[in-house]
Amino acid sequence: MPLLQQSPHRLEPPTALVGKKLWLPRLQMGSSRLFAAALRSVGVDADIFPESDERTLELGARHCCGDECYPLKITLGDCLKILEQPNTDPAKIAFLMATGHGPCRFGQYAPHFKSVFRSLGYADIPIISPSFENGYTDCADSSSQFVRTAWRAIVSADILLKLLHRTRPYELVPGAADALYNESLEDLSRILEVHYRTFAQQGKALHEGLTRARSRFRSLALETHARRPLIGVVGEIFCRLNTFSNEELVRRLEAAGAEVWLNDVSEWVWYSNHQQLRQIAREGRRFSVPAISARIRNLFQRRDEHALLSLFREDFQGREEPQEIREVLSNAEPYLPQEGSSGEMVVNVGKAIYFARKGLDGVVDISPFTCMNGIICEAIYPRVSRDHGGIPIRNFYFDGTQSELERDVGIFLELVRNYSRFKAWPSPPHSPSYTRS
Ligand code: SF4
Image (cartoon, rainbow, N blue to C red; front, side):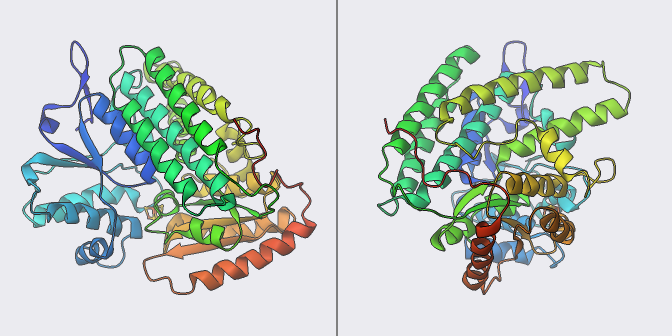
């Protein structure tokens, strides 16, 4: 079932979703919240899963045999937790669970959910599954207002998270950066849930909201001469971005003295778009309607991203993302040739190399235990490190049973500090030095 359909007059939810609340997994909390706001702007009653907890794991484990990936256990547990709430009417809810037919088990999540729901008597609960293979355009036609709004939501959430990670390690008042992040998220959510008559109006409102967020963060009291090692974080998209599943590894790295540069959600969208166009070309349909429509979507997405990010040039100095996903993929090419490999492993290896060349002091890969992408990356990282001045690259695996995380983070940061004394590439600026406004 598509997420949205085009009526003669406007984009709207399909009949099966009318009167239902659509629940979205907490990928990165901010991007999920803003994506939900974008859905509300076209009439879908969308919200994100409540925070995961012990009950999530308990319910997820009841319906897993142990071979499933950790993100499946968490997202399934969260769905079941919603279903067991006394005020939940199963006839009035639906779930969103993306899918894909790539090299790993991700494509099995939605079928597994369906089978568990069926066994529990919830066979009629719709599961909406936009697919990676077509750049998630089965959400709605790629030229539609929704696809553009959703993209603006993702980029805005990435920007806010980057502002948080750029400032939180240097804050003088503990909790101040998180408070500004939450305030800004609320502000942007209110902007994105409005249905604007034109993209220009929406763009203007978003521009103003992000400018307010920038002013808030620029007025934050920060240590100005602190030198912290900068750690790039790559890895499996859910575990890397979902703070419950990675046991707040970013905060732990910060508490141990580091600043973190986390791979964002937009990068995955660029990769999906790239793969979609490659597939179209492979099928000999370079000049087909889907190819042209995908290229036009890319063009608008590039323009929107540039317009929103340009507000933060000073704030993200030294932490600029690659201009094109092609740069990341060509970094990975000597280790994972594009014609023979695909998926997150390619993006993660390529980005780890980008981080090394950008002068970062170390790279962390966050993956679920037994993740196929994580395992392949772990086999390649020693070569990547050797070819890039010995930059420390460490895999952290999660399955809900981590016990020595503090110790492992501490050891990793020792390696990082040693490497940073001898590395070949100059460090990006340390504490934020932009002009306060
Ligand atoms: S990327 Fe890893 S964790 Fe995610 S579905 Fe694939 S194998 Fe599982």
